[in-house]
Amino acid sequence: MLSHMELRTKVATCVRMMAMERMIDFNGHVSVRVPAEERGAGPASDGGPSRFLINARYSSRVALTAKDVVMIDEDGHLVEGEAEPPSESPLHLAVYKARPDVGSVAHLHPYYATVVTIAGAPFKPVYIVASEFGPEGVPVFDNPGLIRKMEQGEAVARALGPRQAVLLRAHGAVTVSTDVEGAFAVAVALEENARTMLWASSLGTPRPLSPEEMKAYGAPVSSRGTKYKMWDFYSEKARVSGWLNGLD
Ligand SMILES: [Zn+2]
Image 1: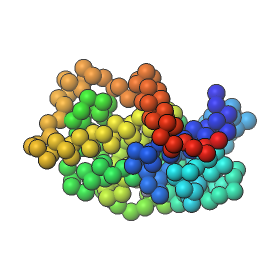
Image 2: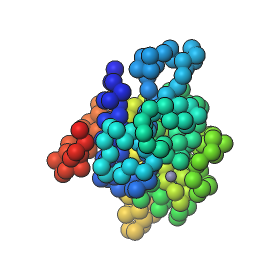
Image 3: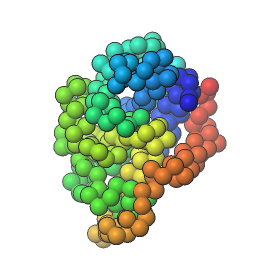
């Protein structure tokens, strides 16, 4: 079980890695549900309060440290920390409310995946790691507005359904998983698939994987081995290239 400080550092690390990969710019945020044991209370379903850690609204995404990650409650109020939470916190909170299985939410502005939503092209898996998303691909939430109210967040959560990702037209994407590493891995698969679709479309019509091919490949991103392997690769890439300088 990670401590609060370790979770804060993990969120900061993830945001910096996403900035490195152009999946987050000066906006965008990663959150994590604080485990009940860490809150010093029983689980929310037993009457304990829900708590979430999220990077603050105005902190630079490339220089985040643990102190730039604040704790909020299920209504978005600041519980711990001194900085303002993001204005789109309701997006995260609505997803956590709708999905008890979700332990981490990332709201990104990934360049290529957003281009796909603008072109109106269906987002289908075209390379093997994205077989994770299955034959129906990733849905698009057809409203480019910012998600600043709980009702808007609930609409995004409905579009997400039981999936791991939803695209927001002309805005960005939301990825979810049981942990921060998983939300990061899903984001990488999403953006790499979009980039691949775009390049393939310059040469011809992108050919999605067949349902049989996807089934044969399985769900690589949510498998423990691949998820943590991806995290290790990108966190080492970030470290050796200086993206994690000053994190601690
Ligand atoms: Zn946004």
